[in-house]
Length: 253
Image (cartoon, rainbow, N blue to C red; front, side, top):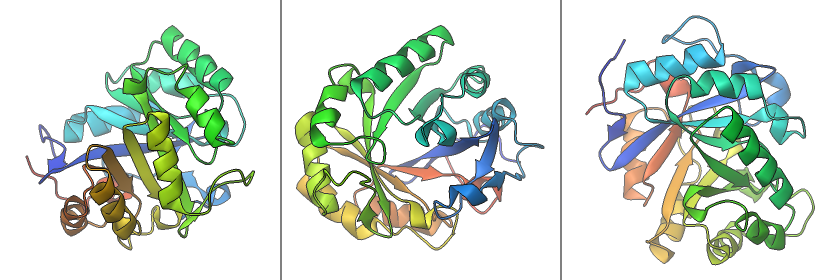
């Protein structure tokens, strides 16, 4: 088990991922959430959120963890108990809990303040109904704490209501115009598959066009070679889960 290791590789920093479902940490597989099972990890026994968060913080000196509350994303209540467990690990959290309206953003901010949990809020394409709603969310969230997630499935934007342009680049441009300076580009088809990063070419195009924006991606990281490729394609941070739990990723200071 690794310890006292800065979670970075070359110019790309690693953000460990916790997917929450039914009060446990689960392993994501290609976005097929009904098939997600409790994670089995070399880092810790069990799948309790607090144990996994502490293991990631201890084993990799992680200071930030991305948390996807899958039940909340599917329309349920945010998992307060699990978030409180994660808060006890002392890490800063990036949280996607299905916020897509000003009201849902305000509700989550109030809940996080009660826990309390130091967090950045992710507004995901999957959850926000229109560009107008996206801009309205930034009237509630401090822009320095806000992250937009360009959610894709096999390259197609996850736009359930059909109010967004069909091209991922156009959606990213609208998010930047709304005031977001940190964007995640995530294709769920690559999550947990270990087949490499499917968003590299898109991230290269976006980072060339908008070099002042922080670009983040993940899903499919196999090892250090993928991190090198991400850095070469303008990505500054990588979302990683399976490669950490399986011990496939050697992280160096």
